[in-house]
Image (cartoon, rainbow, N blue to C red):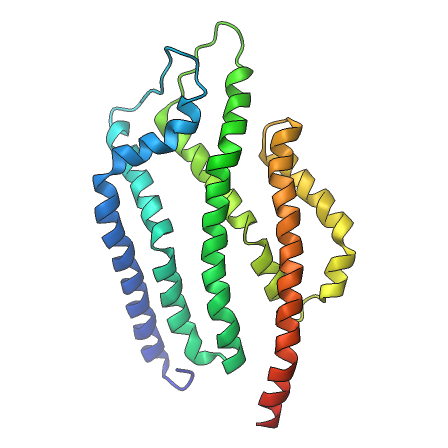
Length: 247
């Protein structure tokens, strides 16, 4: 594809984008039918912690329709992410070296799994903790009645934050693979990484030690996983580089 004219590249890019959008659209058709059930399941971590006799509210007339549909649209993109990443891979693969193609393909697959893992961790581990905290600190006389749109925006931000945080191993691997930093250098910075992880945990979670630790410890462990992956990639890359230079 590197020898193709610019117009051909643009046409190829358009085709890949259209296929990715079609994949998202097909998933959305299914998700839209179950939009209300999806939102109910998303709200369960909060509903289970709210005081008896309270419920969520909709302050906008159109919220009961648009909020579940917005959730269905976002989830459609999440579910279709492997197909979207495949289209990205198919577009850039012809311009990569052989050993780069062997690296990027598994990294794209692993990045999807890690992103899903971050979302699952936020839903099953983080949400019960932070919603227990939020509902327990409400002042006396204040009725908890969260707006459904505000709740969706809040949880989507957390989903995105934890999904991106779980991409740390991929970022570490790519940094070391491209030569931007050495594995040994990153390993020596471990104390600073741990401090940064707990600082981010303090900023992104409620002000209690449990919530901060729930984010900081996984980030640190994911950093360690990234170091292991980077060492494996570096060991594999050396003989491959020598082979390509000989050819």
